[in-house]
Length: 237
Image (cartoon, rainbow, N blue to C red; front, side, top):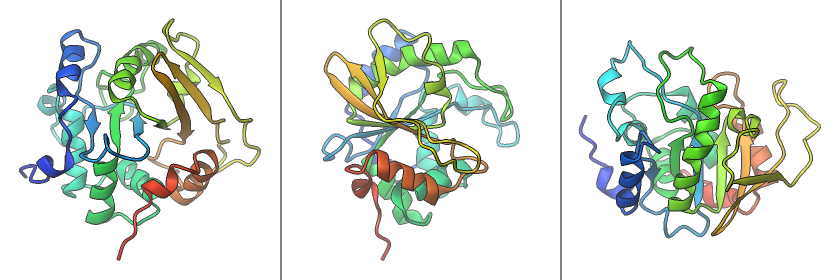
């Protein structure tokens, strides 16, 4: 299906800078930036973990192209196919059921990219420690171009690998570990990411694939980033 919503949903104003990073092999795929991201009262960058090669969907050719991340987001907006990860993420962030309105409204507002900038060989393959170390090096240019106020990490692995940060990157926790587990998993502390141009508030939720409770993790986000969640909320009439 052609990407009929591309012009009204996607902001390409950062592409000259992203292209420089692709040419320098700092990025493999263009990040997504919604049309309203730059003018939003709070700029939110959602960080997913990794893409993977899916032989059943025959995405080997598509995943090799730099627009793959954007293609996935556009396919979710158009409801071409359903992904548990994206469906759960939509419910968690917007507080609304998955429908054309909630999905499109969310991705118009926020930016997104994948932390690991190489494709996994299959859905069951996992990034290595080296992948996460490289991911923090890729994070720096993405953050410096998009300059988010808030980063929401959809998965804990990136913040579980802070032992090989780039020299220019500093991250500190600002809240204690929460004492109540959700599905056997304890929410991590909120944290701050320091860049030369300013400070990003960071938070992480469990990866929104399997065994994920959108409502419970939304409650965690409402505690950790209370000024952000009303902006992400979608009202379905």
